[in-house]
Length: 167
Image (cartoon, rainbow, N blue to C red; front, side):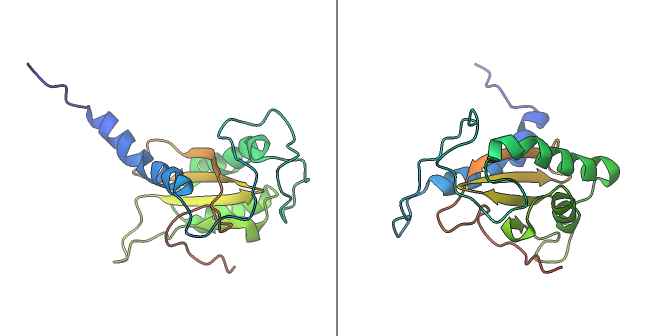
């Protein structure tokens, strides 16, 4: 019998989605210290304003949820990608700030690798209550990707090393 070999496109899609899956799995991992009584977070979009979502210091009204803000987040991300196909995290952070998201709630990965080469992709996020808006762009990603993910217990969205947003 002949085994099915995945196509190059399927392999690239799997490679591109690996960081998103890693963030998802890390968010599900048991914590070494119990999280302060946080409400359960569903991956399904909320039907409307949630009484359990916590207010964050953002420029958006308290009733906004990550799901309701996803279109604005996606639009800002896609505008930067469409105009320049930038793989510079600052471009996305600046566009998100211009779209009304609070910079102090954001994280972004490095634009370059540890040896100084351009990164294959960058990820950026905005914390909204107990959830996160997460975006990823770059040459290794078939198309710019944005989604709502559960926030990490320590108040962050991205796992691993991120760069300081100090501009």
